[in-house]
Amino acid sequence: MKKIVLASNNKGKVKEFGELFAECDIKIIPQSHFKINEVEETGLSFVENAILKARNAAKESGLPAIADDSGIEVDALNGAPGIYSARFAGLDVSDKDNVTKLLEDLEGIHQSRRTARFQCIIVYMRHANDPTPLICTGTWEGSILDKPQGANGFGYDPIFYVPEKDCSAAELPADVKNHFSHRGKAIASLMKQLVYPVTH
Image (cartoon, rainbow, N blue to C red; front, side):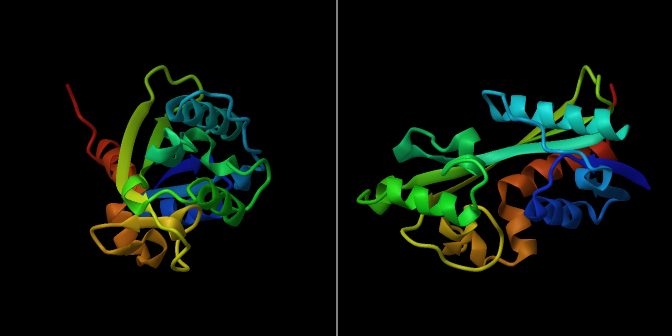
């Protein structure tokens, strides 16, 4: 079985990646297993941050590494919080703090102008010096609700409205969410390339 280290200590992400890769002969090992700390995200884009995280995990573990950088873009806020989604309300804050700040920033803005999307960039590096990492993307379109709904998922899921299902992302069962989500789409693209690599 192929082993890949996941460059994240986020329990929600670790759970999602484990579920999504369960159908492949690939074992996802969180970087916490190797006592690897989160690397500082100094990139100016999702791609740059994902590469920084994957390279650090591969270097410290000696295994191939996967990293994702993802976030939510709100049109009424000119794409914010974007790459700062995890620390929108400050450093070392909870998901609830970030959700509260986003709702406060959107206060008074009509539902028709609360369009948003989740973006996910996943990078796979065969080793720390991989010159051609695999880069996969996924986008999930929706809008921001005026208050949290549902208890599943993590992050901004409780306030992200999914038009196809007429509910929040936090009200979807895990298997349904993984089918629609930005991360699910990016991982599906990555798995296709890992399991059935394109040959030239």
